Image (cartoon, rainbow, N blue to C red; front, top):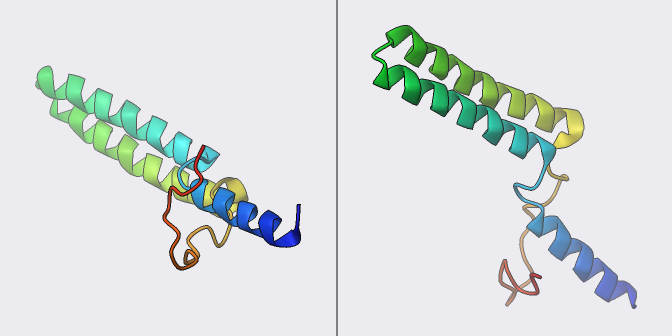
Length: 93
């Protein structure tokens, strides 16, 4: 493999990494828990449960941001501009 091919492969992997991180999955999991708690509380007519769900979801966003800042998010530079003529899913497996 030439250096050019290796560099192109590394760029492709970096772009495909979006959302496939521990921080992203943790954030989504906490948001799903909050949404579920809120849905059950709403059906049971429990305003305190809906408020608790909102707090859980805000906490999930904060946890995700903190995890991302701690290095569990995507690599810096994944949002670099693509080379001209290349699409985001070009060469995706």
